[in-house]
Image (cartoon, rainbow over all chains, first blue to last red; front, side, top):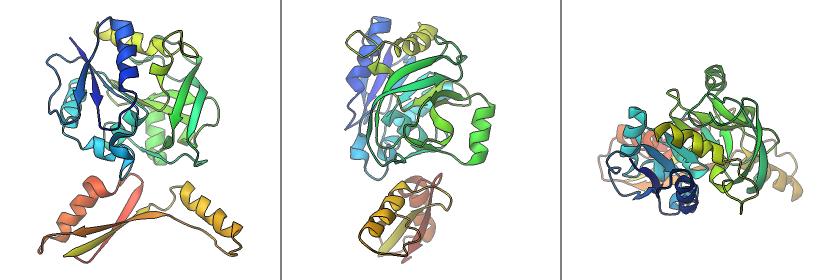
Length: 221
Length: 76
């Protein structure tokens, strides 16, 4: 039962994502090209990596969200397969309509690339079960368009449904209500701007992203 | 036929780029710039007879992100 990492032209965190998955599962995930129209049989986890898919043309994630492989990713998400989108992957998930809202230019207009403090808002999701509720963790961000926007009704709804998985514990990019990551209504799709795959081994500044991969990949193991 | 599409942020959606442009204009000595909203302009060369409904569909499915943006079509 393989995991799959989707590779778009311009993805640049696909190999980091694959390494994080292999660290936890002991198996290299399938690397699936954006032009493919299906996922490998039995795919039980899909990751959309960070990067600058299609050069961020039109809007970040806009072209990738309409690429051939996304039909299969949407179908997998609808079947309940866990789907993780990090950074550009989060942007793709919102553009594809798998998560509500949009990611706009950072409020300060700067590309932000540093470790940031996050609070685990909901530790009951399949992605965050390895954390304690309210736990503060440090995960790197690296993005220009991470300023989460949704209208007030949508924000109230996703907050009320407990769908905010991670919230920034400091000022980072102007995100509405400090939202750093949120899950779908079904709980099996997580989009987040911070990069958990950059915090999984000793060479990184910390290993606090590992619990996310252990949580979601443990569910499917 | 040539069709033009103007994509703009919805009212109420903060526009950090527009804000930066506004500040820069102030820095250049232009007084009285009360607000700036930046958008996107797209030219389409379409087969004659393409309907406005088709262009609207293009806008809704790709050219604009209707979560945050409005669009205006001219020339069809």
